[in-house]
Image (cartoon, rainbow, N blue to C red):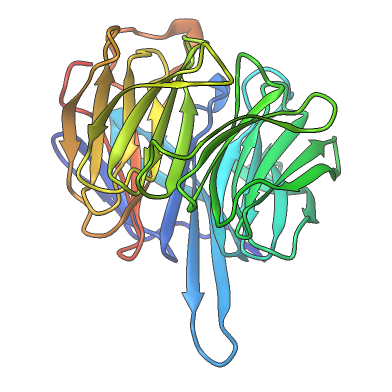
Length: 359
């Protein structure tokens, strides 16, 4: 079921705060479209557990038009779904139009195309292109490979699936038991896309080589004191990778030796590090969602030390979703301050803001 109703709960803010709104469910992920022609488009997902004799997990997927210069946050389209744990846009380049994939509580992966309205109305909407139930367990996280031909998916039973992503279908290519407990993080290596990283509630951080039969490249069991929540490759450095954990630490890894990665440094962010997003053009800066401690902007220096340069505490619930808005690279102003989208769970709050720090 989908709807095209204007959002009545949009509020313009002042100062570093641009705008905010309340979503229709518990907010857990926000993703700005990375394709330059659609850098104004923001996707947001929700997951709401309705308890009782027959518990249900419902959700929604919404897209917004964001214009930080005009303090504008406009709902374009909303789709009712099963409860969503993760969303990701397809990478820039491989696909003619942006695709948005969702991982949901029904064990399904669904891929939506971003379409233009054809009835004379301005704006975009989502049209489901393909979907598949790939597991009896819940789909918790996903990632596209750089060519947008494969999707990795982490499951609540600790397994991982590798899907081939065709024009109108998804097909499971590989599926194996990767971890003992919930697999919250999966990430393709953008420089070596035959490698996939995973992190889990079993406190383990692993890498898998997909050539031939998937084999374990490494399995780190000691660095994280609690579950691994997120993994991100540094976009400009083929040997640097970041992990976030429930133990409140952001860790910087040197993966030059893929069989034995080195934990170069770590920084405590005061809350479980649920999501990390590298800055689109300032590659030593990352945005982190820190669960019970709001959001943080962290600089990872060349000597691999890290420092918090700014925090944001305008949310009153679990900080789960965070992303940077990209600029149009064809005429991007390097002095521009990038807008940020953040969301929090129980208060269902989505906020757009601009960092005060001159990053």
